[in-house]
Image (cartoon, rainbow, N blue to C red; front, top):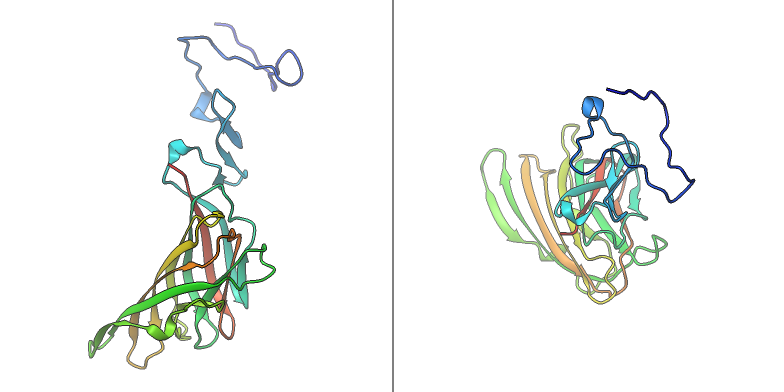
Length: 245
């Protein structure tokens, strides 16, 4: 068996040529099953996926329909707000924001708003509904209630996500927000939120909050901002794009 030892294999002509390894019916063996590239393409030159070199994938081909692709992770440490201003594009039809260990500096509401101008203004009109399920640590009371005071009706105000979060050292909130078709210029933009957190009650109150609604705009939603109504917060917010299928 012949052996070629080299560091680079290049096509005969610069640019446009193809290097072929093996022929029809042949098996090409890669030692240690290790192929390293930031872009994998099919025979037509279409990207199957693109990596940033650190393991974060984007541009997943439809063959991976339904996969969650991590686009961005932002870590807040005493932050007044966190914004996502470049990731909401037509690449994906569905986006998911995951809130992990959100901890406020004061008993306040964690909230969000959208933008149609890349984050210059967060004031998109929206209509929403909000309800919650609650249970005390001592089992003294349990409720399932519509919280009309947390709703918005054709309002440009920020929408509440966590209501009155606890500031105890061991308390935090987690959950997710799903946004559908933000790049559409035909339809309003639907979203829903589900969260779990501890309410600042002396008896310890577990709160499961639900919110749903839509941005009343046919302009593309291209940025989202998250903040506390007052004070700052710690925690992680991850943004995923859901592959088209």
